[in-house]
Length: 238
Image: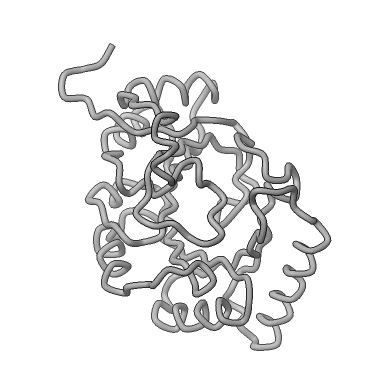
């Protein structure tokens, strides 16, 4: 039953428990809450079903309580909840985070850092993942600063940059120089998310990125593959 005034969230999918395949929580069991809608469309987006408006009919308008009930059903007891998208910063997720905390859940959010929300400060973990040149998008530092200001000292905040080529790598180095106080994760890009991935190609990209980081002695960076892609390919809901 929906409480009066309870927020409705545009949900693309809720699934898990599985393990987080990226960033600070890689390998950690989690339930994903993927919202629908985004303010950007990147060249290599691997979740177009949660981004493009033609998929809007597949997104459910779910009250906060129903979303949390589904998380509880899937997990069975307190779990890390990964808020993803699209861009989940578009959604009024503050009520979900507050109610979930009361039940012992923790919350991590990944967003490209284009939209700041007051409820960022209530998160346990925040990943800002601005998009490099290969995405076809432009990073506006003022938007990133607004996200950092909104988060304040609430969550553990990290950066994650997807790297496909030298231009992306240079972008990541420049971004890290602007924000030296934050941990940086570099993730190997998945070039054809609509097809079955080539593990050999992905690992070759990983080795190249490791060599770039170590040759530059950028020892503060953490280099990661997309673990879930290596394990399950480009399947949804894993």
